Image (cartoon, rainbow, N blue to C red; front, side, top):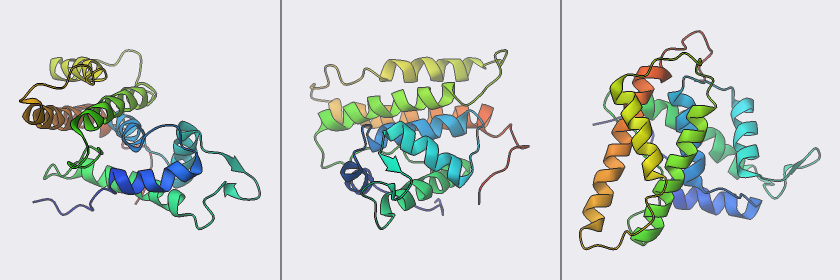
Length: 195
């Protein structure tokens, strides 16, 4: 049993980000963060906030900061997302979660969100700054290929066993990400880690 902090729900984060004009989904944002962490990148609170707000295309200005986030709840959730996600990925009990809409959402919506999550992951992993001559183990290379294939998973998800298949794919994604994190995410110890 994991003793890491629970991830903010997709619905709660979406509720905080939509009024700010966020253009990307919470799933894609979380995927991007996981990709960066899996690639070994560690960010300060300010760097992560800037990355996330830019990724979401949220409007900011010098007087208000994030326009429409008067109480700072959206920004606080984004900061907490970084710390919670890193804690889950470092958890030796595999407490890592993939941020997706809850099980009450239609399967089609959850499937599309999984594709968005994988797209975000690949974007984050690709921008994490791995050396051009990085060697990938066969497992890591396969995981990246599979995540790229899952980006387009939303096409044709209406067979009878789709719910069980979806759960298996989410579990596969979770373990593939933990494999990549173990291979690349823990190797840049010289960079500061936030606590």
